[in-house]
Image: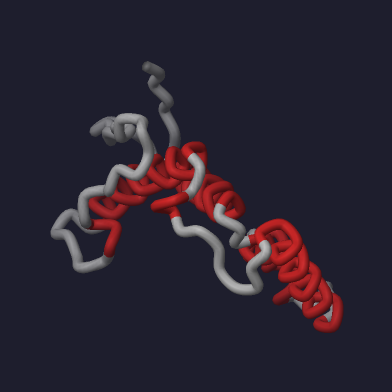
Length: 133
């Protein structure tokens, strides 16, 4: 077992990285354009809209060439093990952050206990009482 001490901001980056990793693994290649770096460039107008559309078309074509499907792909339930492990870890971190930010709870999915999809045990995460955020 390993222990890792991270800040809230680092936890949020880990969530985004694990989400992207698990989505790429289930052929949701369009998620690449949702990366914060590209979103910033797209919304700032730095990237031409025609180029974005061309990129989206190329991503759709890559998905078809790799999976044989035009839309969608396998879900997390049938994804390869590394994708399910990544998804499990991101759920655990999201769950912890949700309760830390709103101790009274809520109805959002992140307040529900994480569902284990991989063969690995669910990760454990604890918040230190003396952390300096």
